[in-house]
Amino acid sequence: MIRMLIVVLALLVAFPAFSQDSSGKDFQRTGTVDAIYATEGRIVIGDIPYPFSPNVIVHSTNSYRLPFSRVRTGVKVGFKMSSAGEITELWLLPKNYSDRR
Image 1 (tube, rainbow, N blue to C red):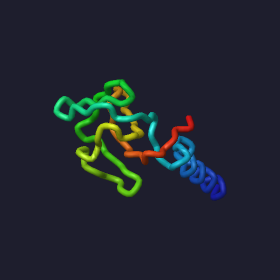
Image 2 (cartoon, rainbow, N blue to C red):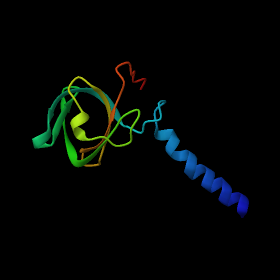
Image 3 (cartoon, rainbow, N blue to C red):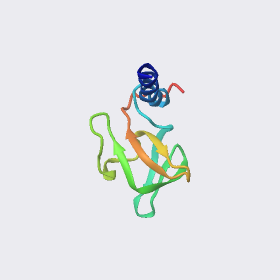
C-alpha cells in the first residue's frame, strides 16, 4: 500500500513537468507583441488580437510577478490562455529565445 502511494505521488509531481517547454515555462504559445490596448483589455501578438484578463500575471526570467506595464511592443512573449481564449499569464522572453515547437 505504501509503495503504491509513493508511486502515485511521484506521478502526480512529475506530470506537470511534461507540459512545460525546455526552459521550464508553462506557456501554450509564443510570439512578438505588436500592439497593446491596455484600456480595452487587448494585446496583439504575432498579428493576432487577444483579450487579456484584468488579473493577468506577468512573469520574467527573474521574477514571478511583474506589473503589466512592463509588457512593451517588440518584446517576445510566451502566454497561457483560459478556455475562453483570454490571456491569463504572460512570460517576457529574452531576445534570443527560440521556440522549438
